[in-house]
Length: 343
Image (cartoon, rainbow, N blue to C red):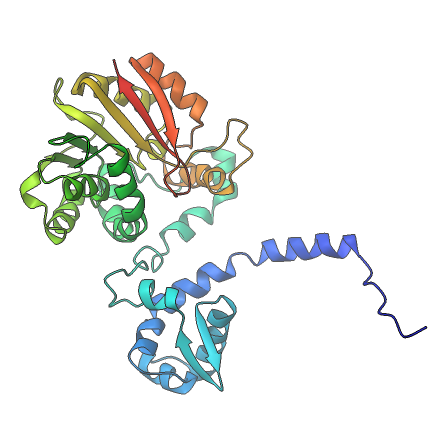
């Protein structure tokens, strides 16, 4: 018989060990990307430097190390390489060049998450976080850089939430409260969809300075008011709003604070109004998806009481606060959005 290719032997033990090795080195892509952003390597390539020597000269880095870094970025599909020259991929060109209007790298340049996760074993022993980003002093230094990246990531989902609310289509003149608004991306999307909508943007004073920048950039300043203060103490008033937006805030507040907040929002909403929660939501067994599960640990190291919560838990909280008709809707993000109606 003609030569036949023998089937490859399966080595289950080797596969298991390879998986462990892969997990051990899973830190590498994050550090490779962060270093490239700090050194503006993508920007230097965009400016016309395409060889390791030219890029190293522009970045004031070691040529040998730069070549290794660039090759690693190629392996991550963030650059392409041919005949010793490096080019940006479409993803890198749009999101990783610092001069791009869609630059996503602001939070990736930082070591904040890296530093918080490094003592994870110690945090697990004590239950005490590395720091507390929900407290005003830390929040006002931590979030302005973070929200610049989150604004880019959440623009698409925010417009889908505005569409779900019927802004500018079936509903006009919505009165919206954007709680702990960050860049204001969720409220801005409603304002862009409906020029008659009015948004009250709430956050710590130091964060609202960043919010104002984005509101001006999107040309919706006349539709915004600003409410500074701690969400645990600020007065939202009585029956003032049609919609209350909680965009990625419950996870840092924890259960007790969030349940109290929902009760106060029930009072702040008009009859028939709704709360919209955008957050990381694991399944009811907490076995996945991976990102919401990992993010619970991110809250362990970064907050006092933060966690991620299941849809079943949210439904219990809403019922206790007086909300009904709870539904979840996919918006093409890491988790569905949750909408609960006030009686």
